[in-house]
Image (cartoon, rainbow, N blue to C red):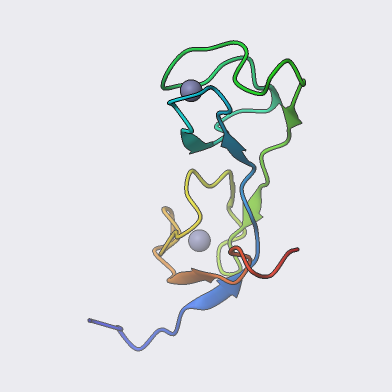
Length: 97
Ligand SMILES: [Zn+2]
Ligand SMILES: [Zn+2]
């Protein structure tokens, strides 16, 4: 791995994770936008959570180097898209109960 002499800077976030409760689906996914989760992206069921409404807020991350603010699409992001600063997410599962 090429480090370019720059150590990864720790950031901290967790993405809202959904799990479809429809039988035979059990799809797990990360929410992509704020608001109500209306259906499962895999089976399209609107009853994915057995009628329980779920509202999510996507976290935003500020790059420690260039202060660029962005919404991560995945938890294991490796670098800032703008300044290419290497980042490491410390907020991955296990941190929170
Ligand atoms: Zn589903
Ligand atoms: Zn940056």
